[in-house]
Amino acid sequence: MKSSHEAYMALAIAQALAAERMGEVPVGAILVDAAGQVVAQDHNRTISDCDPSAHAEMNVLRRAARQMQNYRLLSTTLYVTVEPCAMCMGAIIHARIKRVVYGTPDPKWGAAESLYHLGRDPRFNHQVDIVNGICADRCRSIMQTFFRNRRKAN
Image (cartoon, rainbow, N blue to C red; front, top):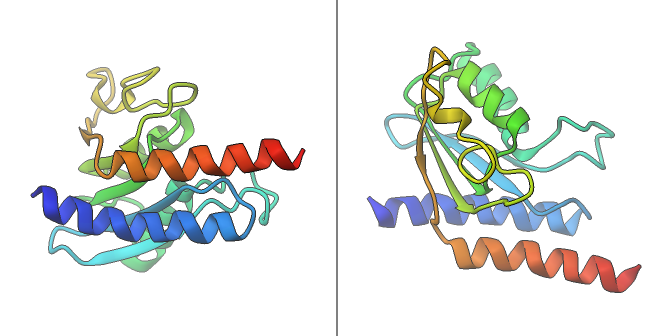
């Protein structure tokens, strides 16, 4: 299972690098269906879209819902390079995503495990399986390099 997680995470990393080339915070995501097919992939677009909700996860959920003609994305796995925030975890729960696999934790915004455990909260009518640490070093390095370069430029 770990090797397939790493292969899918490599696709999310490619999306993160695409975001970085656009000057966006480098977060990438992909959604995979139960058969292992990639349904949607995207990256952060908050700056280019002038949209605070245009996180990689939200963009992928929107694309996948249109593709699948259903807002409920049952039996899917979302791969994302950085732990989802509260907004994204809320959308993940509403969409009934089965599993979230992420690379590096986000100690300031993470709502899958770092600050909150929204996907596992029994008060919601849906719980999400969470897998962390897939390609963590690479995902962390992309974020650290991006913000280090941004600080130097300012």
